Image 1: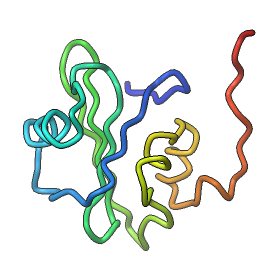
Image 2 (image 1 turned 45 degrees about the horizontal axis):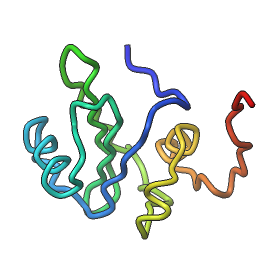
Image 3 (image 1 turned 45 degrees about the vertical axis):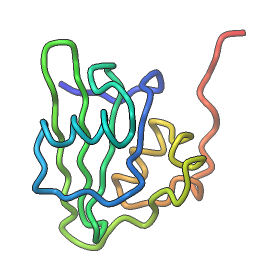
Length: 115
């Protein structure tokens, strides 16, 4: 079972991705275009050109998970436009995005952190 927690680091590929890509092609995008380690355990999030589907790639220490969500109606209401927005996506905001909502309209509080 895959669970997205506040401790996960999220990396959003801002440019649309060809959704014919499988695990190996998405892993190559992580390494070559994003210049990040796909074996890090971080979540890598991709969307297609029309924003009607999302793919999430994650390595769990035993193998890769590739999750694909295609919306039955409509498309994503929001996708990051710049690297600042893409680098600051939190787990709860990803869940809101996957439900076709706008994460910043939800005004979710920050995660609890020990002082």
